[in-house]
Image (cartoon, rainbow, N blue to C red; front, side, top):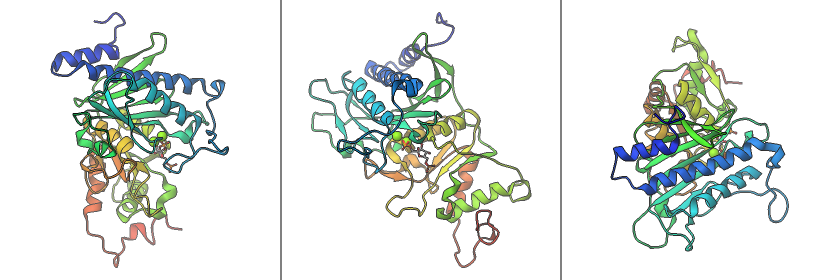
Length: 361
Ligand SMILES: O=P(O)(O)OC[C@H]1O[C@](O)(COP(=O)(O)O)[C@@H](O)[C@@H]1O
Ligand SMILES: [Mg+2]
Ligand SMILES: [Mg+2]
């Protein structure tokens, strides 16, 4: 038994390596570098206004800085992105990185050795919550890099979620956590700030198969597709509706925090494909939001879907591609997939989401 009574992240990784001796020490070192970046971000988030890290980032020409997504960058988006790049570029484990905040992939500079993995990340998820002091996080995905020393291209990152070697997130909430899957279940660690170590506190996390809690941004209801309207209407109808049970609703606007709640006590999260903006078939990004969260949820016995099928099977076509995402307790996600699979008859609208719809005005 370790001295502290709990396993540290380093001890956990060493033990994993003993079980799979073929795994390289590079992989463990990479996870520890990612964890270090998350600790640095946690410190900045924790200091908040004292560290002057709140508010929008100023662009080169004055005014707010806008990222490749067309969204205003917060100071912490930029700082967190920088920590990820600086702390992970030197170790010799990576061939390149890609980030929500960078338009193009970031190849490892020639000054450092080139490694065999790719790191893809959303350095700060839930940015709209920074200034109001609510939980935010970082999300990451690890892929294999192509062998050889050809120049890295965007195509090298376009791997389906099933190909991920590992995925995880850090949560900067009342406590700082790191939740990780190396493809053998999901384990959660809490940061002991005095020791500066992530300690294993949530071994073998599991998503309960059933739930009475759902999460969706209901202000988008007029843009939803019929199967999503039907699902939500049925939840809202509660005991007196077809589901014959009451549901509770949550919306934090930090997907990483919603994922953590669902990994802890179950639930279903929807940011589905909708008709809000024809150029964006969804809000969330496939490579660094949907895929890593989908990997964790499936490793914990839950289900992650586009509504039409498993999200981890989607073949990406662009680095910053967006996608509809539904994940969480298996029975609810399967139900939503069933609703999408049922033939829609526009001439015979379902009364639940038309005249009697709870979202109808
Ligand atoms: O403001 P909305 O439309 O509810 O969107 C909230 C969603 O946007 C996100 O914040 C997107 O993440 P970023 O902060 O990394 O852009 C998700 O975490 C969250 O689920
Ligand atoms: Mg995000
Ligand atoms: Mg972000």
